[in-house]
Image 1: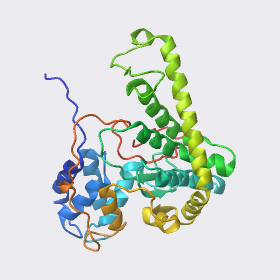
Image 2: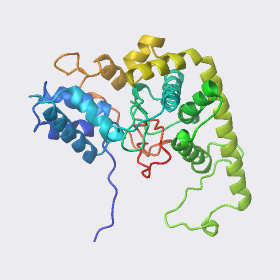
Image 3: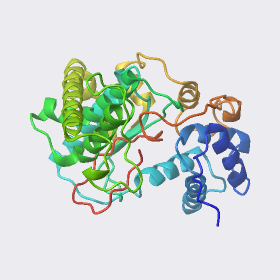
Image 4: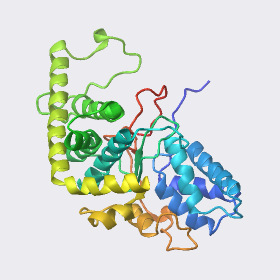
Length: 343
């Protein structure tokens, strides 16, 4: 029996081709090519199985609404369900709902203002069956190498929810547990694997498959302590930077949070209308998707260029997010037994 070889997740061209296959069996409110291009841009990091689930879910949603054709709204709702699960009837107190809104607004505003952060598509405080009390959806660049500055912006964005809680309520909650775990994993990779720390040096100590306990490590206890110290120092510095950012953009966070409390779900266009355009440029796929209008079918609005024409191919491994391309900032319910998330 040949050895198992993992299959990489498809890039934007591959996702468009997969959507082309699945969409041919669905009656669409527009041309297949236009839908597949926009959906490929919307779903970085998705596997072929995820794409199949989105198409099936969108068709079911349209049928439940007694629609003759499936449109972009159905696909966007389906994508949200694949990412965060079904909407939940969970009842939250007004105080909890307010904390969730400011937490998610913190993530959104940090991503809006940090140069290397992924641009926002949508943020919601509607609870999900996966245990998420809210999440934000972004559209990142499909890149294979990341710099230290890019990774640190990712870390700050992940910490911004907790920073917003600290700034606006004077205390933090358990809701940032998943954010903190992601931050810890990312920073340990910076120091231990990518050689992005001066004190530890240009060395790499990845955890080998089958490794068990300190006896199998390639480094000493002293080096282990040094790695721990540097990780704590980097996270502390990033949190201080994030607190400063949230304080400086306090009014922006407040405006977004209050709009979330009013509407529950808002898009990049809502945020731009409140606080102005994102100060840093966004990637081509994001600009095309955002400019076409959320919820509008390709037959109703300018469509994104077919993703197959966008040359994003490169070789190598993902640097910094472990292959993660869709990065919702989940505000996790610590009492929920599941740990389902998209990184």
